[in-house]
Length: 158
View 1: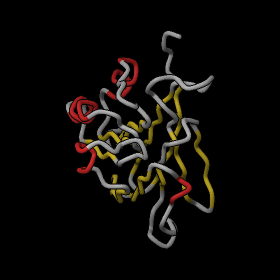
View 2 (view 1 turned 30 degrees about the vertical axis):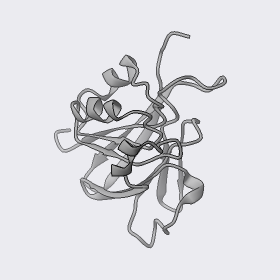
View 3 (view 1 turned 180 degrees about the vertical axis):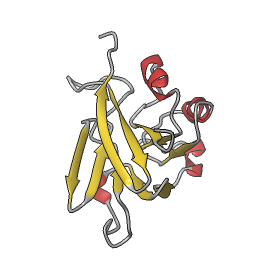
View 4 (view 1 turned 135 degrees about the horizontal axis):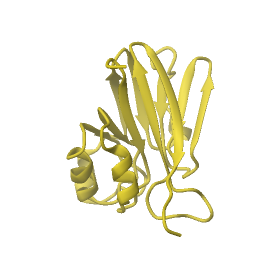
């Protein structure tokens, strides 16, 4: 539908923006990066694709990362999303704050769950592969005040 907003969600690039992740993000209305960016040029590359919201991860300790906040509260269409790198450090009550989606990273494990009407989205990691975890991204589709989310495993060279 013309009113749908497509939001690309990535995290834990750790300095590597894979071409497969970049290709997935083309056509998104917004991009959200859940932290552990790894290098300032990642932010520049993403911002060239779509408006970007990014938070600082626990590995983003270099001087350039000081411009990133640890959390962001953003409005996407008719919903609010809260972005934080490590879900274990969640410092708000999403329901009381009117938040519909909580976006995080850190674990490198892609996951979409819904608890008490709040959608929790972790895109996993699309940077360097860790252990046997998938290389993945996520997508939000926002239509007015409705939102859906899914994770997508990227087909990358081993």
